[in-house]
Length: 69
Image 1 (tube, rainbow, N blue to C red):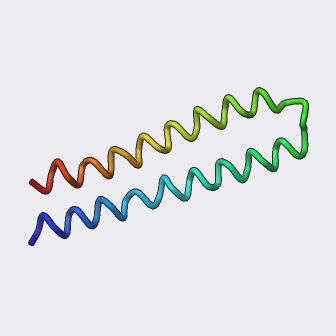
Image 2 (tube, rainbow, N blue to C red; image 1 turned 60 degrees about the vertical axis):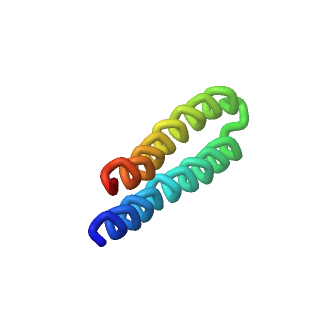
């Protein structure tokens, strides 16, 4: 029973990075609207930030399967 609860907990832990990715995208849209000439620079930062946030989400997701066994 403890393994199942841990798996659910790690799954819920992936919600944080998901919300973070949404906020990153929203702020990138806002920054692009304010200064369109920085679009390329902002896109690079967007992709890097999303990659780091997604990595945390994947670690939380995989940890549920690794530690539940």
